[in-house]
Amino acid sequence: MSHTEELEEFDAELELRLKREYADVYPLFGYCVCTQEATYLCNRFEREIMPQAAYPLFHVVMDDVWVWDKSRPSRIIPRVEIYTTQDLTIEILKTPDSDAPQA
Image (cartoon, rainbow, N blue to C red; front, side):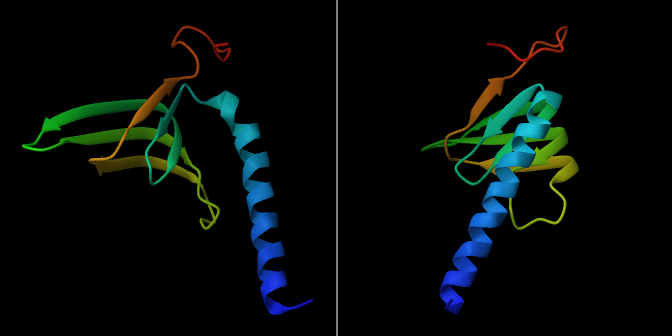
């Protein structure tokens, strides 16, 4: 097996572990926040839109966060703060008074 094949196999293994972890932690969170750079699961967020001349600037603060990143040794982060001018998608996974994910 070549060095390149070994790296590809290792990367595929990391990706599979990440997908399994995502499936395990998904029910624990109320929101999914997606940017072009990353996907986050969180239980609380604040979003501020800062108008600019040519584009909006989004400032998002999230607490109790799981981040989709196979390079991190730990994906659970207490607080994340991001600024982006790219598309921002926020999905409600479950209502605050419900423990079940929304259909």
